[in-house]
Image 1 (cartoon, rainbow, N blue to C red):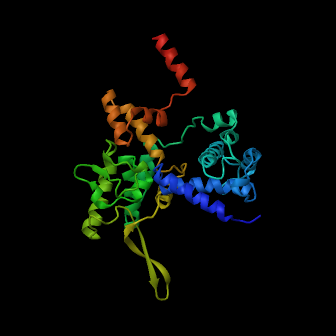
Image 2: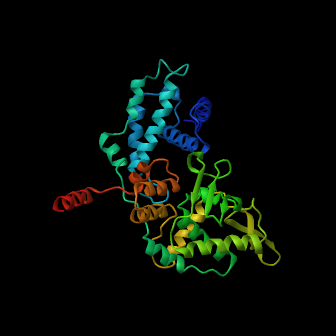
Image 3: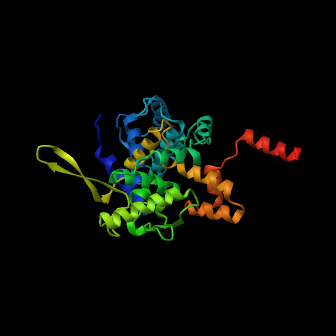
Length: 341
């Protein structure tokens, strides 16, 4: 069979347009959907969508069960399979009402993309997210050097994640103008910052170890006074590279621009923990670290709500469900303790 079918490509293009304009999805979400549909096409050896049969949906589940994660070489996670099936099901659900498909596809056929009940439960089971304690984070931070401009940047980046719990994608796109170091404010303007769900967030530095704030303020002052960075320049700039005769491509210092994505930022934070022989935690894990810390230091429900809002959550429920789940074992301990009291 052909690797690509022109009619299939037109249909996928129409669906991508529908997702963007009718459903308001961003490019990243649409790309995930297109990748899932392409997997389905691969499983059918690129048959036309108009040749769909419900058996193809059943076979697709078998196909996914045999696939391996490109990075780990392990079978796909239950959550990955579940999400892929959901995305492809959504595509065919849209396709049912499309001209030329009413005779070959029904809503009943689309239901064959449903995951098994058992696999679905496993896919949505909450898993504990590894995170560093406040003491572990401080240990990794203190061990980071602060001599060269790149060392200053990396340590300030660590400090900033501990001060704000901001998402790495947003941090990668921040500019100096988005931060007020005197007030300790960070304005994640969704018009310019890669904030989750394009949501604008105003946050205050969390009340954590003063060393984090001192390090970050020193970094901003260094950018402004020593490097002469302006408000529109990156808060955490990438390296500037260029050709040097006799040496080839070399690092020429800090660029004015930030990184295109969060991968380099993740590598910096993971490296900081690896350098002190600790588990390589990611920046996102700091959100749980800070939530656990907030749960300990907040003395009222109003304070805890403010802490949640500072993380960018509109609802305290989101914070609790995501970062403060109560295990069944802990549930029993708490209730037993109340009875004993």
